[in-house]
Image (cartoon, rainbow, N blue to C red; front, side, top):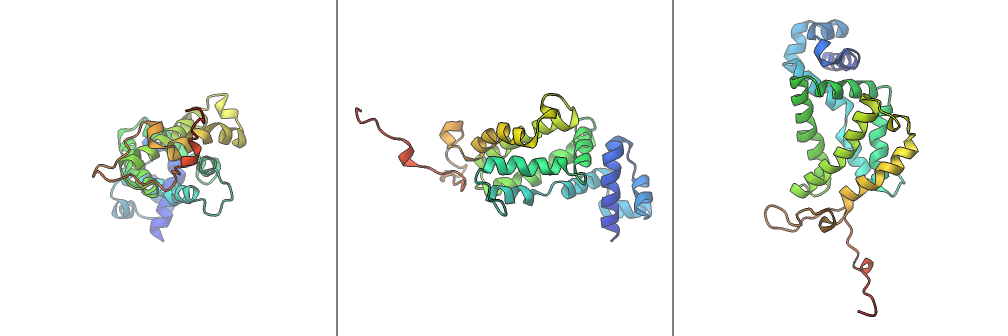
Length: 219
C-alpha cells in the first residue's frame, strides 16, 4: 500500500513541480509516509521518477494497439497514434507526461531515467512484437520519433498550428508515417534486410504481396 501511495504522490508532484523542484520529503508528506520509506522503496529520486514513468506509460497499451486488440480499426498507424494521444489527453496521465518529458530535457538525472525507461522498456517491448531484432528496434524507434516529436511540440511547447489540431486531424496526418515505419518493406525504408545473426528478419506486421508488383504485358 505504501508503494502505491508514494507512486501516486510522486506522479502528482512531478506533474505540478517538475523534477528539479520535487523533493522526496514533499512526496513522503503527500503520501503520509516517512521519507526513509521512500528511499527504502525506490532508492533515489531518479529511480522513483522512472517508476512513475512506468505507471504513466504502459507499453502493453502500445502492444495492444500494434496487435489490434479490442480495436476494430484496421490501420495500425491510426491505432498507434490514437493510443498515444489517449495517454497525453487523459487528465490522469497527460499533465505528468508533459512535466516529466520537459524535465527530461533539462535535468541530467531525469534525462537518464527517461532515456533508460524508453530505450530499455518501451522500445524493447514494442520491438519484441515486431520481431525483436535490430531492424525491429529501429522501426520502433523511428515510429517513436514521430510520436514523441509531436508530443514535445504539441503538449510541452504548445506550438501552433500543431497544438490546435483535433485528434482526427492528427491521426490523419501522423498515421501514414507511423504505419510506414512499422510495416513498409525493409528495402523501401532502406533498412537492413537480415538480422545480425544472418537470418531472415521476420516482422509480423509486414505483408509481402507479390501480386502488388504487376509486370507490364509489354515487358
